[in-house]
Image (tube, rainbow, N blue to C red):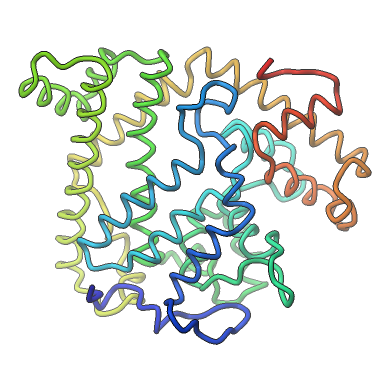
Length: 377
């Protein structure tokens, strides 16, 4: 497929931190995707969870299935906009590599533990994974990904951490947080595909779990439109088929809305290159009505699913697991693997070790070290 002039062309990549000769059969972004898929951190995503923890059922989304859904949605939108599908896929598959066990509960707990030691940001941790923590090559740490993939992985970053990154890599992936420019269109697209995927699969998992009812969700305007539309065509439809068809139509409408709104923004801005697009402000977007409805859906899910008493009880215990593991490893570094225990910055080493855990490994470690079984038993 011919790429648009404002797409990221692999032949014009800003390159890798450690220069390497090109591959004979793959573009630079295809190589990035392949390196991510073969990484240890990517494999661990299958046992890291979103809202529902790993012991709660085999059918709920994990970080791995979420990443695959983001990649699928992202590629579909990129194809329609003549953006680089391979770069979108690489960013999508890597964007959650730094997420802790136990979803956002684990991330929040680890951030609290690290408050006096630089904090913990999962997007920055994903960058640490691909830049430092993966150990697969003889000459350097990390996966040595291209600038464009790394730029997309670092979706959010505090000003303090951006300044630290900028000192280590002048003009690098953190520069945009200091000069208020945007990442590539492919990175913007992946960010929005992440939101679309979240909203859809959390409705699915929430209803499947019994914590949400289809009747509740049908009161939310964005979902209600497609629920009513489906029933209008299939009056006898109910249960999972009704849920799935309504979600499918909602996803399609959001994808087409992003394509139409982004095309209009690009026609107005008329960027002539990927760098011109970075300087033009956010261009990959929902239309105004869809943005408002998507925001309303996120608020509904926050209030009714993420703050559901059953979810809160589980996540509170998950936070306890992370906090107690942190305190134990910090006080007793001999409990850490040798290559973590040997690092001079103990707190960051402990945070890196815990962030890399799967849900079930964290629970096993916590039980081994405390004698308590807080979850899954």
